[in-house]
Length: 417
Image (cartoon, rainbow, N blue to C red; front, side, top):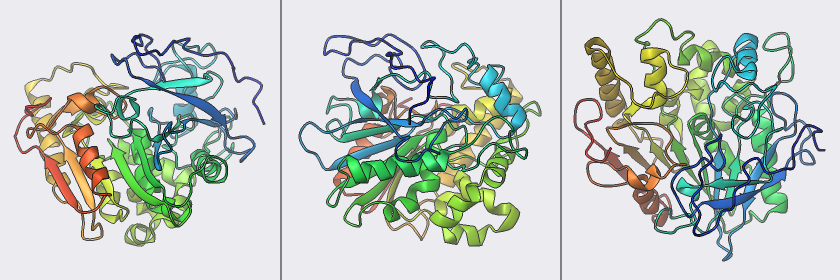
């Protein structure tokens, strides 16, 4: 199956050579960061795997992939991020550009692509950060690399069609997308016994990877070792500073979990969490501070103590990430409380259920940097970057416990920010 609206022309028209620097700023491919060693992945359509693996607008789902050039048995599978919507009104606003990311899908193009459709997907996708081709910048430089772009607005956990309850226009098939991708990787792309699979994601993709992680070992051959990398999905249950941000993250998560069939994934991935938070509390199994204690698959979790996405919304009701926020004295008290709580909550991990886990939490203001050069540039007070932490995690095969948590106090007090 191929959606008639899908373009086969490269959105970004970039030549990724050893001497070129990508300059186009866009959605999740070829984002314009200063790296000469972007890696280039090619599109793989999913319509023939599952005709219901579709975006919000019904266009065909897809992922991007590049196989290792040396026969590596390490696989990076990464779920993309990009906010979410939770009901008919918020999803209509997401589509027409009146809400984040403020791209009108009716007129979207390479400079402002639609977040709810595959119609603007290019044939190739350039990636840096954890995807970078330079071994000095990423321990996965020669891994098999898979990127699932995000067009379902449900942090990859929904599975419902068009409905009067949620939206008479859009469907939410994040579960179908993930299942179809994994099925295609195992059936057609060579993900077989003896492989190590790092199942990962950032922002909304980090939340999705957290929700899916304990289900993935049941979806791949038994001889595949599954590890997790969860970037910026550790959300706090904290009242917003401003009443202008409504509904808050907790209510949004509840709506997506309950009305978009996210509960089916909770039951499949974590029966313990489902038992701990039954009924109308099950949304907590999709929320970082509640779900992480139940994750049993070895993981590396990254959580900036001053998470840019959460603070931008909670303090200034800013739809996105403020690049250089300015706080009043009262706002700064809230921000510092937020950072202290993140630090304290991170120190409670891993739980007794997780025998192997690594926690990375710098006292910095950022969000979702695994796809950026800050992956190898920003560090903790101990001068450990995310690149360093992931290298240590992978060399140990995910075994053991590592904790890199800055302990200073005050906004952006980390030495490596």
